Length: 128
Image (tube, rainbow, N blue to C red; front, side, top):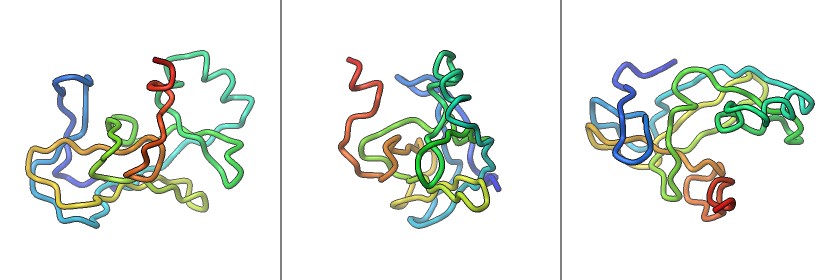
C-alpha cells in the first residue's frame, strides 16, 4: 500500500526524497511495503555494493538484512524525523507512520536508527 498523495522529487541537499501532495494527520500509516529478506552471507556481498546504503538490518536477532520495495529506500534521514518506520517480521513488510502532522509539499523523513527521535549517530555520520 502506497498512499496516492506521496511522490518523489529532488531535494536541495540530499538528492531525491519523498514528499506529500496533501496535509497528513499525525499517526497515519502512509506506506506498507514488502521486503526481500537476505541472509548474513548475502549481506556481506551487498556491503561491497551501492546497495549497502539502501538495505535494512532484519530479523528478531538482527542476523539478516532486507531490501524494502516501494518508496522506503528513498526516504531521507533526519535525527528529528517526521515519520518512523516499523518492521513486521511475520509479514515481511516495513511500514511508515507519521509522527506528527505533515504539511502539503513537506518532505517526509525517517531516522535511519529506527526510533524517530534517536540521537545515535548513523553510519555515514560516524565515518566523517
